[in-house]
Image (cartoon, rainbow, N blue to C red; front, side, top):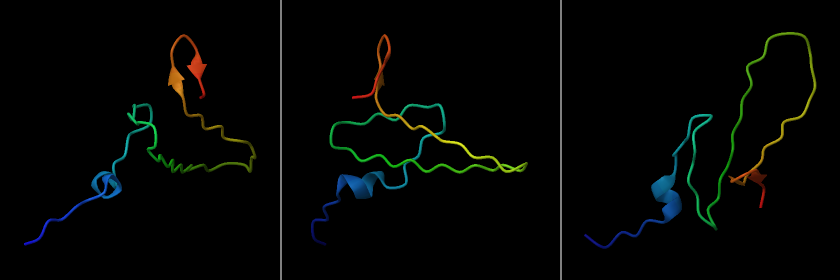
Length: 62
């Protein structure tokens, strides 16, 4: 049996974090956000703001 080398992407594939929980990442990581909304009511329109950053005294969106 030969040596099998996995990439970090294949090792972490499928990892998910519930809403409101933290996902620790490092520079160079790729984070994808999938969002679904189950809404039953009158038609509405609006915007969703997704922000990545860190929270110190205030939220820093570097």
